[in-house]
Image (cartoon, rainbow, N blue to C red):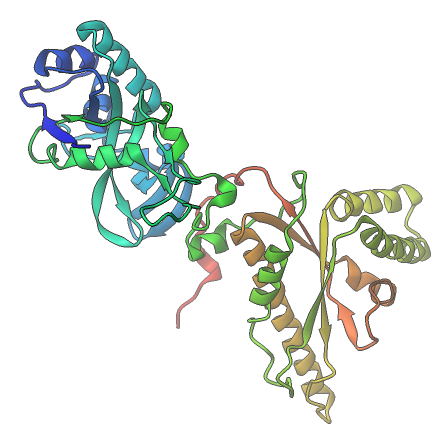
Length: 425
């Protein structure tokens, strides 16, 4: 197969309301099977997506911040694209204006394709392109953000390579390859916003740019490490399903990297995790805790309706979670200081380090796409929780972490200014 790429020169400056299909049909001699690559900038201009500078357009176009460093924001748009500054760009637009991505680039591609069919009678495909950076490589490259009449992906899994081996993971991003090829003859500085890619004979059915977006559950790089810290939320309700054991194992391993108190005399970490996955195991712990709470709260004279409300709130979170992860602390390896002051300081160090360990677990759960909430409940019924978990007397259950799947991303957290909480000396 031989593929040709032809620039379409001579198009006038595009303005809002212009018929792009008509302009392209006048400037190009099209053939059946051609793929027309159109830059995002002229599509946005024709659709009235130029806006005046001065407002926070990046924030308005951002669905989710992936990473931030200084003034640079890597953001996911509502389309699902991850790009610099949510696709807001000032190049090749009049002074004082910015261009935004089309509202629906797939629909834009479909309109141009239909317009070209009506104007020329040719059966063509259309790809709307934009230049994106890559997280592991310098430079930008054209990618497809809108597709019509062309497979966005070509799945080669199950076919054999040149050596007769069955392909197990090869899925070609055909629309991106077309966009990149078109970028060789378009160029930001050349004033050529349209190219024709000729000679493609894809056998897969047509698709859309949405096919190129990796689903949330498959995204291993959804957030930068710094962003994960500030984006983590306490999750109080969970989606159906459970948490895979490899996710829990990774989270436990991450938590055990927390700073170990210097008074810990042995190389062993002073912590352990008990993971309750089955309904009977969770109910055994929660039932033992509830009995202890009712006993103690009645002894404190709390009215029955308030006791019931407390139990209901706890059950709404811990009882509904598909997995409970209980962190436990032992001070059996701590230094045995002779005076009370240093013994109390030692205890505080172990408790502070345990807080860091639990936070690392929560961050690791979040970073893998699941939700978690730490609840201090077992600290109010230590003996009952220890017995229900089958722990040795030296172990102290340090609350519970409710874990489970979540639906979608939490609403973005507003930036936090440390203000009076931060001082430099």
